[in-house]
Length: 178
Image (tube, rainbow, N blue to C red):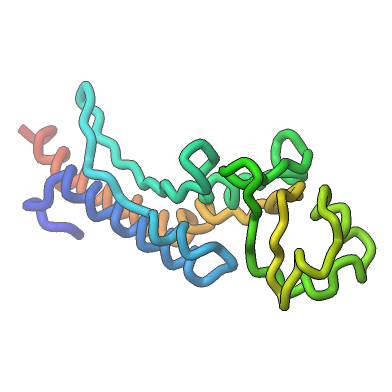
């Protein structure tokens, strides 16, 4: 049972730290890009009209205009997203190229369906060098959702809710005894 010296504000701060730690732990043990756990933060307690709240934020952006990686992995994108369709990824600079590691690039065209992923592309040796793709653009199928927020919360909710409830009893119950 917490000491009556811990304020409700402090218990919310501790609770948000526990939830943040659970999210980061979940993300680092899964198949998530490193940018997501690195971007998770617990914001300070916010009070508005007598209601205190905390926010756990992840702002790992794909680009300044694009969605956050957090959203992409939590909800899915492309064919697994709300619109259910592939989307183009093109270089920022007109006439530029996309370059990325793709171990299967050496076998491009060897499997059915690969050509569809990389169109429009001229399948030449110069576009795929030793597991690296250099392309004018791609039609990306998206990312299948790999939800982690609810799972992270479920791992710690009993501990967090119990701590806050115990603190409420310690802080508020004495007021009712007066």
